[in-house]
Length: 172
Image (cartoon, rainbow, N blue to C red; front, side):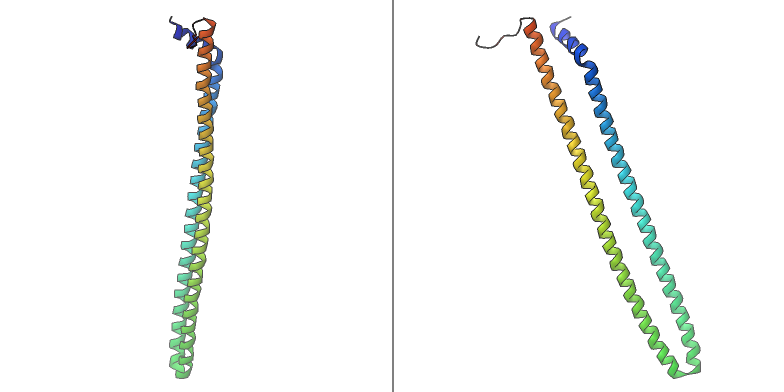
């Protein structure tokens, strides 16, 4: 067995279990972070889908109510038109006003939905930025720990050479 093999064997005997433990911890940490990111992504997707279904349902409901109201008003207008022309003109004016009001309400609802969508988008971006920063921080910690491992390996190699009196300092 050559000298480097002996040093590697000594290093593995002294620090092998600890390094395997660190590697296991780092792997579990990475797995947990990936799982949490996937859970947040799935939760956000579910919320967006639920919001979309809710919005579609509300819009369909408003459209059907508006169509039903319009039909009722037209029938009432026809019936009253046969009875009295004056009453018919007044009713037509009211139907026009109601249509304008309904259009205004739809505009307000669209603005409200747009505002809610912007708020939700901002929240999603904020959560994404937080997760990204957390992942970057954890990755930096892992990289830092790995660098410390390399320095420890160099130090142990130097100690092994000194113990064997094979370490030479240049210029001495």
